[in-house]
Length: 155
Picture (cartoon, helix red, strand yellow):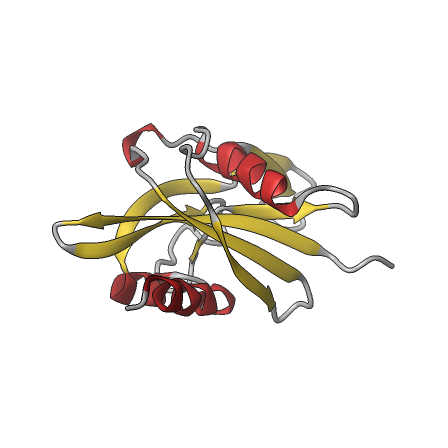
């Protein structure tokens, strides 16, 4: 079986003198009442033969409903998640209006055991956060990408 891989794009900006990153709160009933460790960098799976940066840009657009801004992304590296999936991440400076975010959707049985399929957004909101806030909000397996961004920017 092929190794599962995801690719993502971490948008960053300087706002009021502080570095901020754009992250998204995961949608659906399993995440509805959670805030800490319930946010993610926009990312998604890609398949063998697909360019990971192209996949990262596609997933960004699908999850946020807006194309990634133009820019020169830098590769932050790869991290193996607790479930075994490998995530490749790029960072790019840019702006995005989070009030305009609208996500693609997924289906799951809800409530569990009901036999009823319901549709939920992959992400239900996005926001700009400084690195201290983002470290608390991001799922733990993605925090190393904040460290990599800091190293890249010389912070």
